[in-house]
Image (cartoon, rainbow, N blue to C red; front, side, top):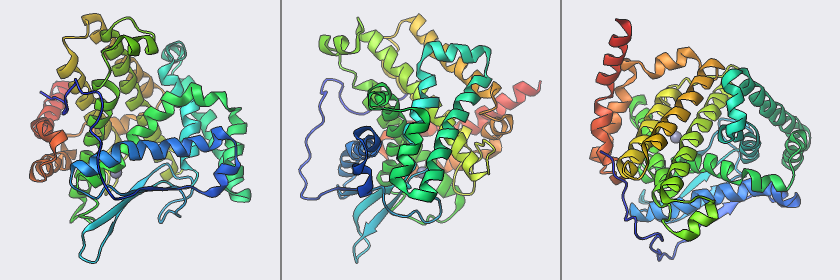
Length: 402
Ligand SMILES: [Zn+2]
């Protein structure tokens, strides 16, 4: 059974004393734009630093981070949907600071995605229509792709500022959309930011390059799982049980707040699964794909491990708080969305088979070994679950074959 670390009573984190400093490198041009056009960059940086300083401190690593939106990516374009992390070391090979970066245009593309596809996952009245017509999800994705392409075309001819403006103009985005999309963008980018910080926290970047592809995939899973635990802690576990918070959220009970926050994080993970499929499409020349690769595990396997970890955390911490209808509603909402993802072809059936293939479990088992040998506190009690995965998938495959 999974239990999150930290005491529920203390709603505030302990202050940290450090002489070190952190920085954010913005392309200067974004501040010549409007407030809503630079906001996605500022918020992304905040999401990295918000969890990063604490995490590095906890691991005894230097609390020094650079979030860099201006460095030219080595192996990808300025609009690739990805992010990365590396470490700067001193002459003795000890870590000095960590740098997390995204390609120049990417935070703006995350924002366009938040305003189109990701929003759909959070609006009941919108998503209900997708259940009858799953292709509507594809239309929403097409809208995002058109906005992104408008931005990329402008980037090629006129650079970053013009690109951001073109993407916003295409989708008709204005200042009030920041408020409407705040939570969605935040949920989306927190997961991405936490994953990158977790690579530093788990020691992956200190060991880079790791000896083989299995280790590299195992560290991806570990970063996913640590990120999931942090995401759960910040978005659900620390939900204040106070009248002020209930009033702020417009809910009448603590149980309702927990239910709504849990629903939100489940949906946010599903929205990120779509983003992963689109990142696959960027790499594969347009075909949506959740394939992994040499250094990354299959996308659906990654998603399912994160989802199972999250729902274990919710249930092991809050089963007694949530009513049975609320528990069923969480499960039902999740299933309905997976169904739409499958029927619309965003989650290709080939990827589903790969994601559930018992032969794809080498990295999962290696992740369990590394979590134990590296003593990573957040995910210690997930290891037996990881070790049982191959067996469970074999049973599932066999029972389907009967
Ligand atoms: Zn990664």
